[in-house]
Length: 372
Image (cartoon, rainbow, N blue to C red):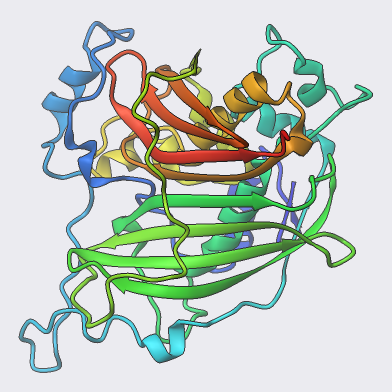
Protein backbone atom coordinates (compact mmCIF):
# COMPACT_ATOMS: atom_id res chain seq x y z
CA UNK A 1 0.00 0.00 0.00
CA UNK A 2 1.10 3.56 -0.67
CA UNK A 3 0.12 6.14 1.96
CA UNK A 4 1.04 9.78 1.43
CA UNK A 5 3.58 8.79 -1.22
CA UNK A 6 5.33 6.18 0.98
CA UNK A 7 5.29 2.43 0.31
CA UNK A 8 4.04 0.67 3.44
CA UNK A 9 4.44 -3.06 3.92
CA UNK A 10 3.90 -5.24 6.97
CA UNK A 11 7.63 -5.31 7.60
CA UNK A 12 8.30 -1.59 7.49
CA UNK A 13 5.34 -0.07 9.36
CA UNK A 14 7.55 0.96 12.27
CA UNK A 15 10.15 2.54 10.02
CA UNK A 16 7.56 4.50 8.05
CA UNK A 17 5.23 5.39 10.91
CA UNK A 18 6.37 8.98 11.18
CA UNK A 19 5.84 9.52 7.48
CA UNK A 20 2.46 7.77 7.50
CA UNK A 21 1.13 9.96 10.25
CA UNK A 22 2.77 13.07 8.78
CA UNK A 23 3.71 14.25 12.20
CA UNK A 24 0.43 13.21 13.83
CA UNK A 25 0.67 12.37 17.51
CA UNK A 26 1.02 8.77 18.69
CA UNK A 27 -2.32 7.01 18.46
CA UNK A 28 -4.39 6.63 21.60
CA UNK A 29 -7.96 5.48 22.17
CA UNK A 30 -10.38 5.74 19.25
CA UNK A 31 -13.77 4.23 18.48
CA UNK A 32 -14.70 3.89 22.18
CA UNK A 33 -18.24 4.81 23.25
CA UNK A 34 -19.73 5.64 26.59
CA UNK A 35 -22.21 2.78 26.77
CA UNK A 36 -19.42 0.25 26.39
CA UNK A 37 -19.28 0.26 30.20
CA UNK A 38 -21.52 -2.80 30.18
CA UNK A 39 -20.10 -6.28 30.44
CA UNK A 40 -18.19 -8.00 27.67
CA UNK A 41 -19.24 -11.45 26.46
CA UNK A 42 -18.84 -14.37 28.83
CA UNK A 43 -17.09 -16.62 26.30
CA UNK A 44 -14.28 -18.54 27.98
CA UNK A 45 -11.03 -18.11 26.02
CA UNK A 46 -7.85 -20.10 26.41
CA UNK A 47 -6.57 -19.75 29.95
CA UNK A 48 -9.93 -20.40 31.60
CA UNK A 49 -10.82 -16.80 32.54
CA UNK A 50 -13.95 -15.38 30.95
CA UNK A 51 -13.64 -12.06 29.24
CA UNK A 52 -16.00 -10.73 31.89
CA UNK A 53 -13.54 -11.84 34.59
CA UNK A 54 -10.61 -10.31 32.71
CA UNK A 55 -12.56 -7.07 32.63
CA UNK A 56 -13.41 -7.13 36.35
CA UNK A 57 -9.94 -8.20 37.47
CA UNK A 58 -7.96 -5.71 35.45
CA UNK A 59 -9.79 -2.41 35.19
CA UNK A 60 -12.67 -0.42 36.63
CA UNK A 61 -15.62 -0.13 34.29
CA UNK A 62 -15.61 3.57 35.03
CA UNK A 63 -12.32 4.16 33.21
CA UNK A 64 -12.93 3.38 29.55
CA UNK A 65 -10.84 6.38 28.52
CA UNK A 66 -8.19 8.64 29.88
CA UNK A 67 -9.50 11.49 32.03
CA UNK A 68 -9.87 14.54 29.80
CA UNK A 69 -7.37 17.36 30.16
CA UNK A 70 -8.65 20.32 32.18
CA UNK A 71 -8.22 23.65 30.48
CA UNK A 72 -7.23 26.56 32.72
CA UNK A 73 -7.08 30.28 32.28
CA UNK A 74 -3.84 32.19 32.54
CA UNK A 75 -4.52 32.77 36.21
CA UNK A 76 -4.66 29.04 36.88
CA UNK A 77 -8.37 28.76 37.69
CA UNK A 78 -10.78 26.48 35.86
CA UNK A 79 -11.84 28.12 32.61
CA UNK A 80 -13.93 25.47 30.86
CA UNK A 81 -13.18 24.94 27.16
CA UNK A 82 -13.81 28.43 25.81
CA UNK A 83 -10.27 28.44 24.37
CA UNK A 84 -10.56 24.93 22.93
CA UNK A 85 -11.80 25.92 19.46
CA UNK A 86 -11.77 29.05 17.37
CA UNK A 87 -14.87 28.28 15.34
CA UNK A 88 -14.30 31.16 12.91
CA UNK A 89 -10.96 29.65 11.93
CA UNK A 90 -11.66 25.91 12.23
CA UNK A 91 -15.13 25.51 10.71
CA UNK A 92 -14.79 25.62 6.94
CA UNK A 93 -11.12 24.62 6.99
CA UNK A 94 -10.31 22.51 3.92
CA UNK A 95 -7.15 20.57 3.18
CA UNK A 96 -5.24 20.47 -0.05
CA UNK A 97 -5.72 17.19 -1.99
CA UNK A 98 -4.09 14.26 -0.19
CA UNK A 99 -2.87 11.42 -2.45
CA UNK A 100 -3.76 7.78 -1.84
CA UNK A 101 -2.85 4.78 -3.99
CA UNK A 102 -3.69 1.10 -3.63
CA UNK A 103 -3.16 -2.17 -5.48
CA UNK A 104 -5.05 -5.38 -6.10
CA UNK A 105 -3.16 -6.82 -3.15
CA UNK A 106 -4.67 -4.12 -0.93
CA UNK A 107 -8.13 -4.96 -2.30
CA UNK A 108 -7.75 -8.64 -1.33
CA UNK A 109 -6.20 -7.79 2.05
CA UNK A 110 -9.10 -5.52 2.89
CA UNK A 111 -11.59 -8.25 1.92
CA UNK A 112 -9.88 -10.64 4.34
CA UNK A 113 -9.89 -7.92 6.98
CA UNK A 114 -13.67 -7.57 6.85
CA UNK A 115 -14.32 -11.29 6.95
CA UNK A 116 -14.27 -12.75 3.43
CA UNK A 117 -13.35 -16.45 3.70
CA UNK A 118 -12.60 -19.10 1.11
CA UNK A 119 -15.60 -21.19 2.18
CA UNK A 120 -18.00 -18.44 1.13
CA UNK A 121 -19.72 -18.08 -2.27
CA UNK A 122 -17.99 -15.71 -4.67
CA UNK A 123 -14.84 -15.52 -2.54
CA UNK A 124 -12.66 -15.49 -5.66
CA UNK A 125 -14.34 -12.25 -6.72
CA UNK A 126 -12.78 -10.48 -3.74
CA UNK A 127 -9.63 -12.51 -3.03
CA UNK A 128 -8.19 -13.53 -6.41
CA UNK A 129 -6.90 -10.88 -8.76
CA UNK A 130 -7.04 -13.38 -11.66
CA UNK A 131 -10.82 -13.70 -11.38
CA UNK A 132 -12.69 -12.23 -14.34
CA UNK A 133 -14.95 -10.29 -11.97
CA UNK A 134 -12.31 -9.29 -9.41
CA UNK A 135 -13.71 -6.38 -7.38
CA UNK A 136 -12.88 -4.27 -4.38
CA UNK A 137 -15.54 -3.97 -1.71
CA UNK A 138 -17.16 -0.51 -1.80
CA UNK A 139 -16.53 0.10 1.90
CA UNK A 140 -12.81 0.35 1.13
CA UNK A 141 -13.66 3.99 0.45
CA UNK A 142 -14.16 4.35 4.21
CA UNK A 143 -10.52 3.32 4.69
CA UNK A 144 -9.47 6.17 2.42
CA UNK A 145 -11.64 8.49 4.49
CA UNK A 146 -10.21 7.27 7.78
CA UNK A 147 -6.62 7.74 6.57
CA UNK A 148 -7.49 11.24 5.36
CA UNK A 149 -9.11 11.98 8.71
CA UNK A 150 -5.79 11.57 10.48
CA UNK A 151 -5.10 15.23 9.78
CA UNK A 152 -7.64 16.04 12.51
CA UNK A 153 -5.02 14.93 15.05
CA UNK A 154 -2.30 17.15 13.67
CA UNK A 155 -1.42 20.77 14.38
CA UNK A 156 -2.18 21.79 10.79
CA UNK A 157 -5.71 23.10 11.40
CA UNK A 158 -5.95 26.68 12.72
CA UNK A 159 -8.08 27.21 15.82
CA UNK A 160 -8.51 23.48 16.31
CA UNK A 161 -6.94 20.80 18.49
CA UNK A 162 -8.39 17.53 19.72
CA UNK A 163 -6.89 14.86 21.96
CA UNK A 164 -6.84 11.40 20.41
CA UNK A 165 -6.99 9.64 23.77
CA UNK A 166 -10.46 11.11 24.40
CA UNK A 167 -11.89 10.54 20.91
CA UNK A 168 -14.88 8.29 20.18
CA UNK A 169 -15.72 7.36 16.59
CA UNK A 170 -19.42 7.97 16.96
CA UNK A 171 -20.87 7.84 13.45
CA UNK A 172 -19.88 7.15 9.85
CA UNK A 173 -21.54 7.93 6.56
CA UNK A 174 -20.30 6.68 3.19
CA UNK A 175 -21.66 7.40 -0.28
CA UNK A 176 -20.15 5.90 -3.42
CA UNK A 177 -20.76 7.64 -6.76
CA UNK A 178 -18.48 5.53 -8.95
CA UNK A 179 -17.33 1.98 -8.08
CA UNK A 180 -13.68 1.89 -7.07
CA UNK A 181 -11.42 -0.01 -9.48
CA UNK A 182 -9.46 -2.93 -7.97
CA UNK A 183 -6.36 -0.71 -7.97
CA UNK A 184 -5.79 2.94 -8.59
CA UNK A 185 -4.69 6.42 -7.65
CA UNK A 186 -7.02 8.60 -5.61
CA UNK A 187 -6.93 11.96 -3.89
CA UNK A 188 -9.09 13.30 -1.11
CA UNK A 189 -9.88 16.53 0.69
CA UNK A 190 -11.20 17.04 4.21
CA UNK A 191 -13.44 19.89 5.29
CA UNK A 192 -14.50 20.61 8.87
CA UNK A 193 -18.18 21.43 8.37
CA UNK A 194 -19.14 21.90 12.02
CA UNK A 195 -18.06 21.55 15.65
CA UNK A 196 -20.99 21.01 18.00
CA UNK A 197 -21.08 21.71 21.71
CA UNK A 198 -22.72 18.66 23.30
CA UNK A 199 -21.86 19.92 26.80
CA UNK A 200 -20.28 16.61 27.82
CA UNK A 201 -18.01 16.85 24.81
CA UNK A 202 -17.45 18.28 21.34
CA UNK A 203 -18.73 16.59 18.18
CA UNK A 204 -16.49 17.25 15.18
CA UNK A 205 -18.17 16.78 11.79
CA UNK A 206 -15.78 16.35 8.86
CA UNK A 207 -16.64 15.80 5.21
CA UNK A 208 -14.15 13.90 3.05
CA UNK A 209 -14.46 13.91 -0.73
CA UNK A 210 -12.54 11.32 -2.76
CA UNK A 211 -11.57 11.81 -6.41
CA UNK A 212 -10.26 9.39 -9.03
CA UNK A 213 -7.36 9.93 -11.43
CA UNK A 214 -9.62 11.93 -13.75
CA UNK A 215 -10.54 14.21 -10.85
CA UNK A 216 -14.10 12.86 -10.84
CA UNK A 217 -15.89 12.71 -7.49
CA UNK A 218 -15.87 9.01 -6.59
CA UNK A 219 -16.96 8.79 -2.96
CA UNK A 220 -17.89 10.86 0.05
CA UNK A 221 -17.38 10.17 3.77
CA UNK A 222 -18.71 12.01 6.76
CA UNK A 223 -16.91 11.33 10.04
CA UNK A 224 -18.46 12.08 13.41
CA UNK A 225 -15.73 12.23 16.07
CA UNK A 226 -16.75 12.96 19.66
CA UNK A 227 -14.15 14.28 22.10
CA UNK A 228 -15.10 13.54 25.69
CA UNK A 229 -14.74 16.49 28.06
CA UNK A 230 -14.28 19.12 25.34
CA UNK A 231 -17.75 20.66 25.51
CA UNK A 232 -19.01 23.87 27.11
CA UNK A 233 -17.11 26.06 24.68
CA UNK A 234 -20.14 28.10 23.67
CA UNK A 235 -21.00 26.43 20.35
CA UNK A 236 -24.37 25.30 19.04
CA UNK A 237 -25.69 21.80 19.75
CA UNK A 238 -27.17 20.81 16.37
CA UNK A 239 -26.20 21.10 12.72
CA UNK A 240 -28.01 20.81 9.42
CA UNK A 241 -24.85 19.28 7.96
CA UNK A 242 -25.04 16.00 9.94
CA UNK A 243 -26.20 12.96 8.00
CA UNK A 244 -28.95 11.57 10.28
CA UNK A 245 -29.36 8.05 11.53
CA UNK A 246 -32.68 6.28 10.93
CA UNK A 247 -34.52 3.94 13.30
CA UNK A 248 -35.18 0.43 12.03
CA UNK A 249 -38.76 -0.82 11.50
CA UNK A 250 -40.59 -2.25 14.52
CA UNK A 251 -41.27 -5.62 12.90
CA UNK A 252 -39.01 -8.65 13.13
CA UNK A 253 -36.03 -8.59 10.73
CA UNK A 254 -36.60 -9.77 7.18
CA UNK A 255 -33.15 -11.39 7.06
CA UNK A 256 -30.39 -12.17 9.53
CA UNK A 257 -26.76 -13.09 8.86
CA UNK A 258 -24.39 -14.26 11.59
CA UNK A 259 -20.65 -14.43 11.04
CA UNK A 260 -17.98 -15.31 13.56
CA UNK A 261 -14.97 -13.03 13.48
CA UNK A 262 -11.45 -14.36 13.83
CA UNK A 263 -9.55 -13.87 17.07
CA UNK A 264 -6.96 -12.27 14.79
CA UNK A 265 -9.53 -10.15 12.91
CA UNK A 266 -8.31 -6.80 14.25
CA UNK A 267 -4.69 -7.78 13.60
CA UNK A 268 -5.63 -8.51 10.00
CA UNK A 269 -7.84 -5.47 9.44
CA UNK A 270 -5.25 -3.01 10.73
CA UNK A 271 -2.99 -3.84 7.78
CA UNK A 272 -5.41 -1.93 5.54
CA UNK A 273 -4.26 1.33 7.10
CA UNK A 274 -5.54 1.79 10.66
CA UNK A 275 -2.41 1.09 12.73
CA UNK A 276 -3.88 2.22 16.06
CA UNK A 277 -2.16 0.09 18.75
CA UNK A 278 -5.50 0.01 20.60
CA UNK A 279 -6.59 -2.82 18.29
CA UNK A 280 -3.48 -5.00 18.62
CA UNK A 281 -1.45 -4.29 21.77
CA UNK A 282 -3.06 -5.23 25.13
CA UNK A 283 -0.60 -3.07 27.05
CA UNK A 284 -1.62 -0.08 24.94
CA UNK A 285 -5.37 -0.72 25.09
CA UNK A 286 -5.09 -1.09 28.87
CA UNK A 287 -3.88 2.52 29.07
CA UNK A 288 -7.30 3.52 27.82
CA UNK A 289 -9.10 1.22 30.26
CA UNK A 290 -9.58 -1.65 27.81
CA UNK A 291 -7.84 -4.86 28.92
CA UNK A 292 -8.63 -6.56 25.60
CA UNK A 293 -7.90 -5.02 22.18
CA UNK A 294 -11.18 -4.35 20.40
CA UNK A 295 -12.25 -4.65 16.79
CA UNK A 296 -12.15 -1.52 14.64
CA UNK A 297 -15.58 0.04 14.22
CA UNK A 298 -14.99 0.23 10.48
CA UNK A 299 -14.23 -3.49 10.44
CA UNK A 300 -17.70 -4.20 11.84
CA UNK A 301 -18.98 -1.64 9.30
CA UNK A 302 -17.39 -3.71 6.52
CA UNK A 303 -18.88 -6.97 7.82
CA UNK A 304 -22.38 -5.46 7.85
CA UNK A 305 -22.02 -4.13 4.30
CA UNK A 306 -20.91 -7.54 3.05
CA UNK A 307 -23.92 -9.19 4.69
CA UNK A 308 -26.31 -6.83 2.93
CA UNK A 309 -24.58 -7.25 -0.44
CA UNK A 310 -24.82 -11.04 -0.07
CA UNK A 311 -28.51 -11.01 0.84
CA UNK A 312 -29.87 -8.35 -1.49
CA UNK A 313 -27.38 -7.59 -4.27
CA UNK A 314 -25.85 -10.96 -5.19
CA UNK A 315 -22.46 -9.49 -4.23
CA UNK A 316 -22.72 -6.91 -7.01
CA UNK A 317 -20.61 -4.04 -5.67
CA UNK A 318 -22.00 -1.63 -8.27
CA UNK A 319 -25.37 -1.71 -6.49
CA UNK A 320 -23.94 -0.19 -3.29
CA UNK A 321 -24.83 3.49 -3.01
CA UNK A 322 -24.67 4.71 0.59
CA UNK A 323 -24.32 3.57 4.21
CA UNK A 324 -24.87 5.28 7.55
CA UNK A 325 -24.12 3.82 11.00
CA UNK A 326 -23.82 4.82 14.63
CA UNK A 327 -21.27 2.86 16.66
CA UNK A 328 -22.66 2.03 20.10
CA UNK A 329 -20.46 -0.69 21.59
CA UNK A 330 -17.31 -2.62 20.66
CA UNK A 331 -16.90 -6.09 19.21
CA UNK A 332 -14.18 -8.27 20.66
CA UNK A 333 -12.22 -10.25 18.03
CA UNK A 334 -13.58 -13.80 18.03
CA UNK A 335 -17.16 -12.77 18.71
CA UNK A 336 -19.97 -13.29 16.21
CA UNK A 337 -21.44 -10.31 14.35
CA UNK A 338 -25.20 -10.68 13.85
CA UNK A 339 -26.60 -8.34 11.18
CA UNK A 340 -30.38 -7.90 11.23
CA UNK A 341 -31.91 -6.47 8.04
CA UNK A 342 -35.22 -4.87 7.06
CA UNK A 343 -35.90 -4.12 3.38
CA UNK A 344 -37.96 -1.06 2.49
CA UNK A 345 -37.63 -0.29 -1.20
CA UNK A 346 -33.98 0.37 -2.05
CA UNK A 347 -33.10 0.97 1.59
CA UNK A 348 -31.96 -1.87 3.83
CA UNK A 349 -32.22 -0.92 7.48
CA UNK A 350 -29.64 -2.74 9.59
CA UNK A 351 -28.75 -3.33 13.20
CA UNK A 352 -25.70 -5.28 14.34
CA UNK A 353 -25.37 -7.22 17.56
CA UNK A 354 -22.89 -9.55 19.20
CA UNK A 355 -24.63 -12.91 18.90
CA UNK A 356 -23.04 -14.33 22.06
CA UNK A 357 -24.54 -11.73 24.41
CA UNK A 358 -27.11 -9.73 22.44
CA UNK A 359 -25.22 -6.43 22.84
CA UNK A 360 -26.10 -3.96 20.07
CA UNK A 361 -22.97 -2.59 18.40
CA UNK A 362 -24.37 -0.68 15.37
CA UNK A 363 -27.64 1.24 15.54
CA UNK A 364 -29.67 3.72 13.48
CA UNK A 365 -28.08 2.25 10.38
CA UNK A 366 -29.03 1.67 6.78
CA UNK A 367 -27.58 0.82 3.38
CA UNK A 368 -29.04 2.23 0.17
CA UNK A 369 -28.81 -0.02 -2.90
CA UNK A 370 -29.61 0.48 -6.59
CA UNK A 371 -32.12 -2.37 -6.89
CA UNK A 372 -35.02 -0.93 -8.87
